[in-house]
Length: 297
Image (cartoon, rainbow, N blue to C red; front, top):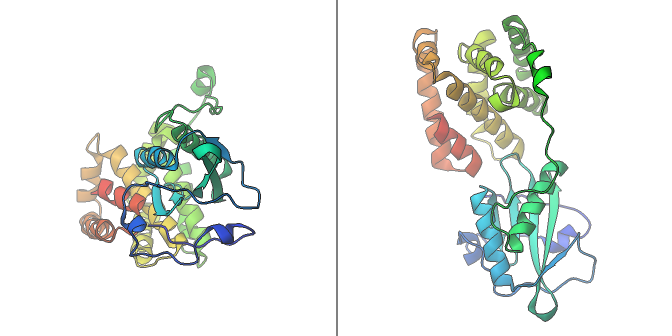
């Protein structure tokens, strides 16, 4: 669960200094608020008043968080939420007029564009529009088909150049540089973000350990699963995403079995990867990382 602290102007007065781990709210898997907290004297961040009691509103929001796989920690009338791309925000319920409930959704850190969709989903749920109501925000425009036909994906040599640069960055002593390289590789191996054939080619090169990239990523995964800071958690997430994407893309044509059995170090990688994945699932420091590790198994 997320236990990080946040600093800021009036956020400090809204977030508890210490979380009572033994409290019923933290043990609960659902969010039911019988009585929302009084409205503060300072202005709220884009508050929305719902003509329902706090119990109904909190139950609806909790159901939406569950359906959308949002990691959340509940503390009274506040929920601290974290998405799989490490956007963190809070949901606070306040007493309104005539038994109504005021909902405030505030971003703490993470992508502002992603927060817009999260806030919309939370408010839709609070209003009773459903846990996964369709978004009314503008979607990213798709590339016309005639332009897609003119697209030439990167060649194998260009992918190898990318891996060579990534290997250099992963040897850096700066964690943020390592994280940037890993996030780039995780995007390149995601078929719906890139040309599917290009993503499959990159996945094959990674699993063949071109420039020792597979073993470097596994070493970073092994080092960071012992840590508890957020940067290490993000590195673990990126490593698992790379392996999960690569295995998913290669398993259809049985390329994965060929690579793991015939390439040098393939069997050793398989054994170590299984051990690390089991440890991540067992420890479950991060729900999203545990899910990715289970997919890799």
